[in-house]
Image 1 (cartoon, rainbow, N blue to C red):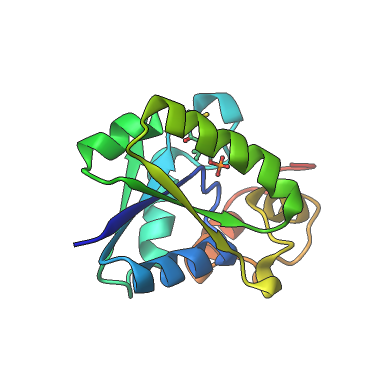
Image 2 (image 1 turned 90 degrees about the horizontal axis):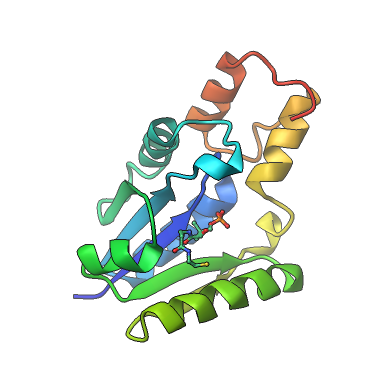
Length: 162
Ligand code: PNS
């Protein structure tokens, strides 16, 4: 049985993340969306909120599970008995960062492989950071995120300039 881990900050989970999750779930028997508990990144949502939102958005995908993780990704993957890291690539500008991540993970755990999935062109501009920025300045974000994320963002007092 094939499985893969799709790790990220997912702050918040966007339609681009959903697209990669859906396509990954169609390739692997099981896909585990792994939400990083990152204190350093000044997250808009708590890790619990990010997990809940990703779960809501992927509830229609029976072979997708959403969990949080802390520490090294490769340690989490060993615990979850997975050897494949799935990452989305939007543009060439993503490549350097992704290449470094993949190489670092390879050094740490040579048995792991990183698979890149090219983002659908209609999401190539989309990032969690961009969504937060547009939201922060009062722009419409409903096209960029799943309905549950949209609802939660609207429930928030708008964070000025975020
Ligand atoms: O959505 P992001 O923030 O680009 O995802 C980055 C992520 C979570 C995949 C990466 O930061 C990560 O795996 N962090 C866990 C710590 C780790 O394993 N670091 C070693 C590779 S540099």
